[in-house]
Every structure is written in structure tokens, then in C-alpha cells.
Image 1 (cartoon, rainbow, N blue to C red):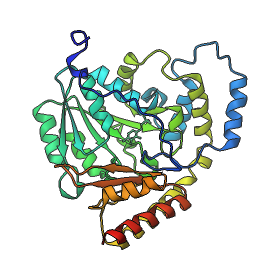
Image 2 (cartoon, helix red, strand yellow):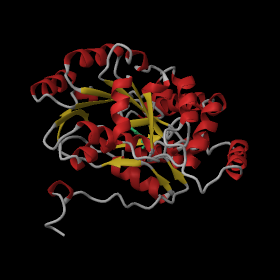
Image 3 (cartoon, rainbow, N blue to C red):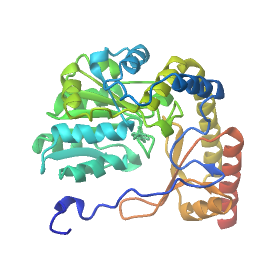
Image 4 (cartoon, rainbow, N blue to C red):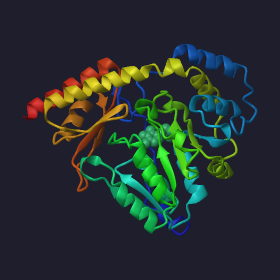
Length: 354
Ligand SMILES: *Cc1c(COP(=O)(O)O)cnc(C)c1O
């Protein structure tokens, strides 16, 4: 096999992880609220009236209608994928040759690097400046010097919560020759989308997902917004039936009922502010501002906090200390009672270690 496999795939680890089994799970920025039961029933009714022996719509017309209504982007400027994950893969397939350069800020979303590796690209990860402010000037310099094909800006950023200003996004768009991918997975929590820039910048591609604010990580539905010229290229590499009929039906129901579903946003924001204030009052961590549904902080006690929470059947995301950054923690907002529980345990660890 060693002779058959591509060199760049050899050292990749397969993503074979079991779904976590904990009482409280806040490690993956999912919504703690399941899809409303009335809407699940509606979905079941629709499925009962759907011929599952037939292939689904190849280009998800109903979904495009709803996404146009939600985002304001013309349907010809939208494409869907099995999670934004698949869209990142498609972007690499369509634009990146082996050896091409991809630029991103770091730390950021792990999938940019994995798909870059699979494409055998050279991924330049530009370390953040102090305070986890992305080093935009260096990103621009690297993208220009190497004629980068792709440049990622994750807004708000996972895991640091950093939010790019409109001026920063425009500065990058004006300076680089690359396709600029603005990952807006958490945009509903932040509210300031770059979507209106699409008509001025043909090289801007915006990634979105139903996995976070819509609480639908289970159905795998992401979408990209851009000019027709980029979207047409992505359709060339799209698998023929990449969105199954169940996902298409459920996504349409979710978008039609978005006012109901997105009502939870206010709860998340209020919970985030409360948790932020609580953690700040402990005076023990370096806490970063968040434009998202999660909080990120650096803490000497990071590992102890992770362990204490695991013992109580709670899973958060723990980043080990490395030469690049101190130990840190990211956890997303659960239900109010879950957050209280988490915060109480964190406080206990801080007091016991003091
Ligand atoms: C969660 C997340 C996504 C969404 O991925 P899906 O494949 O759509 O579930 C995309 N980008 C970032 C930065 C994320 O954190």
C-alpha cells in the first residue's frame, strides 16, 4: 500500500471518532436545543409523502429559494454542501494545485489545514499577534509573495472568538490576488455579515452552515455565497447528489421557520455575557471577547478544569499548552442550568488551586 498511497495522505489521521457520551456536551459549539418537535413531525409527514427510491434534486432548488430569502443573495450565487466541510473540500478541488499556497490566520478552524494537506498545498498559517489579533499585514504579505490561491478569514474565529471589522476584510480583499474565504459559521451570533461585499468583490466567497445557530449539526448542511462566476466553478466539482433528500427537506423546513428557531439567539447572547462576567470576576484567566456562542480563555489551570468537568460528566474543549500558546479552554453556551453547573465547577478548581 505504501507505494500506492499519495505521499501527502500517508501521515494524515483518519477522522474516526465516536460521538461523545456525556451528560453535558459543550466542546463542539453545537446548540444545546434540539430541533422543535412540531417541526420534526412536519418533516416526518413530508418524508412519508416522498419517494425515497428516487434520486434527490441534484441542485436543491427549494433550498436555494429559502437561502435566497434568508440571505438576500441571488440563487445563482449560492451552492450547498454536506456541511461547510464539503464546501471547503470542493473549493480546494476546484482551485488548488499541489504546491499552491493557502494562507490563514492561526489558531483557527482545523478543517482548513486538513483539506489543504489532502490537496497537497502549502498552507501558511500566520500566527496571531499578542491578544489573538490576527496578523493581517503578514497574511497579506504572504498571500502576495506566494500568489496564494486561497486566504481564509474565520469571522467570528473558532476558537478565539475574534471578530474581523469590515475595514479589515476590505483591506485584505483589496490587497491580495487570492480567493478570500470568509467563514461565517457563527454569523448569527455576531450579526455583522460581509454578504453585501459580494457584489463588489468577485473573489469573495462566504461560507455558512446550519450546524451552529440553527442547531442542525446532525443533518450536515452548509452553503456558500458568492458571485455567480465562483459558484459556477464550484458546481463543476460538486458530486451529483451531494445533499440527500432528508437533509434538503429538513433544511427547507428549518429556514421557513427561522424566526422561531433563531429566537434562541437572545438566550445564547445573554448567557454568554453572564458567563463572561462570572469568569472575569474570578480574576484568574485571560479571557477573550467573543462574537460567538462560545467563550475562549487561557488558564494555568486549564487541564485541571478539563479533568474536573470530565469527572462530572461534562465535556469542554481543552487545548494543551504548546510552544505556540498557553493551555486554554473553549466551551459553548449550553442551557442556562448547564452553564451554571459548568461555571460553579470552574470556580471550585480556581479556589482549590489558589
Ligand atoms: C462548526 C464550524 C463550521 C461548520 O462545519 P459544518 O461542516 O457545516 O458542520 C465551519 N467553520 C467553522 C469555523 C466552524 O467552527
